[in-house]
Length: 81
Ligand SMILES: [Zn+2]
Image (tube, rainbow, N blue to C red; front, side):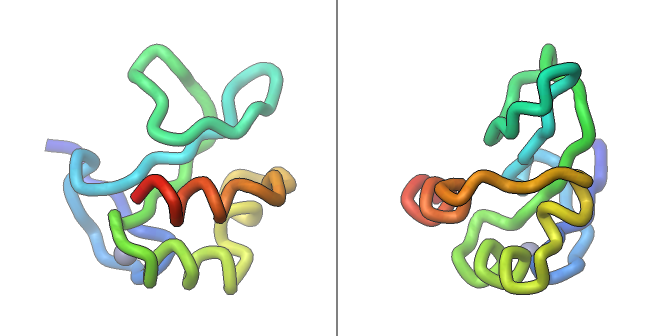
């Protein structure tokens, strides 16, 4: 069991219960819920809109990934989850 922290609410949950967003090495593409073959700095969020909104409001995603986040990422997450 692998525990990760949600960037929206700060709760610790199992990896399977969280959305994973990874900045893919070496190109720096931001990918949502990558498979285990994709490596890179990652950020985790609960599957709910409050945590997604909260993480973007506090700029947590770009801070944790140390990268600028594409403008459409938030919309994609809110649509998908
Ligand atoms: Zn959360």
